[in-house]
Image 1 (cartoon, rainbow, N blue to C red):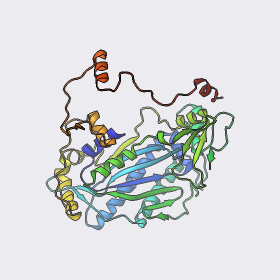
Image 2: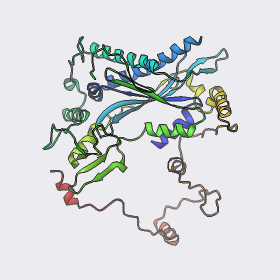
Image 3: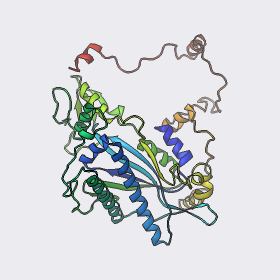
Image 4: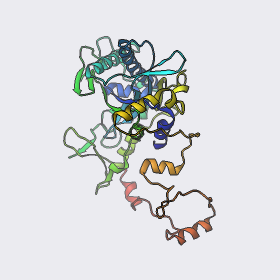
Length: 405
């Protein structure tokens, strides 16, 4: 997660403004996408294309023809209650790239986004996805569900059953099969709806919801890296997991519509939910679109070391002047994609191993010690001890085993 975020920040995303787009999907569509990789990629492509079309329309009003934006698309498979909830997080370059007379890329930036513009995007996504579902036989002409997905499922029948239950927040296996997940403490397929404003930068229609209120300036690379770590995060937060006195697993909710604070699972139910969120093997969860894709002719000139020279320096100078900050030259990107472990610790957790805590001097590697006896002597000498610390809490294995039944 952190390594990918650092690589994207330093090597891929040029020094231009960016915007965070989120697409939430109707419940029925989530299950179909979880079972059909072709449909999953199709919906992603439609969303990216509608964003690009929206930017092209804005560019034409300014007299700019053609061009394309750049998008990094992250597929998230989990919801806040450990339910299967496929949705897309997109980092979009907040502008449109065209080619100048000398062949160098030029980016045209637009003012902030408005809800009526978002309404056009969500309307296009909704209509194109519903049209595709009708074409493939999943929806009838009047919007009724025709295809549920089991007979065409690419996976094992049992895994399909787990996914269907997870999407609907129900239990698939065990004595509570079919029941809703325990809590502690609009229609899809019809095109008569009009887009509804949920809040600034958030519009919904026919079960599709788009949020695009978060933007990042070109020079805010720390914010960009933090956002990318969020987009690439794992489905489960260890800090939100706890055990109750009966051996049930509690998962803390970040927000709730009914006042509940946690969802409760038996160990088997917990494993069931994790299994439903595992992506299929050899399927990309991060994709690149537009000028950031591998087949784009512009990619070589807008990523890496050339990004600042050709398309980012003007924005950097302008934004630093607007913010009243001193002129700052961006660091040269590293020559290799490999990121040292010390650098990962520093940029992820703020732990700086390259600076001596006593004198403040620069620390450098002078030797790699791999002999066990020598390692023990050094650890004992500095008072750390040679025995490894205990990890986690002690749990009665027999008790955990019996709690599965």
